[in-house]
Image 1: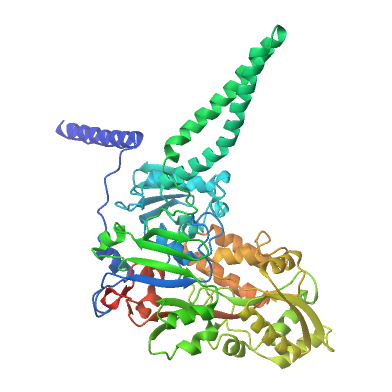
Image 2: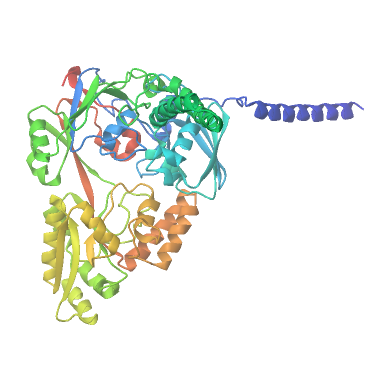
Length: 614
């Protein structure tokens, strides 16, 4: 009897717990909170350090950091185009996840954690205590609104297609969302670790929509007011049967005006004091907009409520503000740096010899997530023959090109992904420089007496220099490359029409492998236009889109690299290096730690001035 009673009590308890869980879900109450991760635990897991190993002296607050960009930032809503300066955009906005030292989206930033319940469902917990620049709180409702805003065609988000696999976002509690996908979505984490994952104040987004709607409604509303006034005159003057018709018309236009006024009234509360996001960014980042002069400069001021400073207990960021001057000419930028008017800039490879021995400057050379190469037209023309593609590729002396074009600041390329990328195939070697083999292959392909081919390159200094060097190398094996130097618009037309044999290629910002793989080698890719149709490659690309596991995806893309490599789909030349230069009094750049953790280090270790002054 006692055992039965005990069993009944256990069952009753289970029923109560199940009922409580159901009730909690039904009314939207938060589930019991997980133990929050401390900043120390978070940093140790990522291998981040702020101690003497990072920098021997303590950071100092103060000063305005002056830097420069070749173009004005553009629109300051990261979902609208054009954005010309993503570095400056990163001062205002922060992403849900950031990438690690291998360019993988693994570092929780505005989110605490994420968990795949299955291939099409992810539960994501948001970090609490994060405040936008307008004082509103980062939470689940705001994140859902933002993603739905991006997906709405009327908002004109350039990155809307990135969210096409998303079916819906469900708010579980104030700081938990559940993502529902239409199908397995391998690039999901990369998307929210990219531009689309930049958190924007929902209040600012709603106000931006209201501003647009109010402008859209203002014209029709004024027209309808005039229509009502005219209809009232007609109704007052009409008699007999005409009076009834005039009255009906008056009622109709009044009803239309009332509808417009009611719709306009709904936007009025949000419009009051609102500013367009394209010119007034509202994110969670280290800095807030102070002043903008399009085409001239951008001034930023320190965010005193930056969540990461509170999370770590450090008085970050250290600069009082940042000024980004627009200086298109790199030589003028360098002159300003040497004169002390700028404290930092990125340097072109051709200028590296000029600054590397300057005692007043500190320079840092880093592998960039880019790839330099040229593409073949595999659909038509002589390069349809793999022997011709091999002949061209083996005629190129990659070491000489790196030395002559980039002053040695590059790593010989093997295939699609840079050497330090998580999808790179380490078993591949750069195509050998072998002019005799090139001549032999050309003869086998029926071009013993020489081969003319056509192509184009962009009208940038480095592309023009590269074009001349390649042209000379091809001439030595009997290939005449008739290359045109074109602007981006004209080259795009050539690319779309497949009006080339061998032309400008490569890819910048290689983070998630699907972007470049699909872009260049899939029939639906935005830069393919039918020039490549490798069945093995297409199958691997589609497999990579569905596989959510990093290790399995990496194997797929390593195999894809080999398939592309073996078929000589492109002539891969080098993976470039980037050069950053600082004035000597700029403190806090630990290059070794940066190379190890990349974005995770960059965003967690702001710079400062020695003595707190420029």
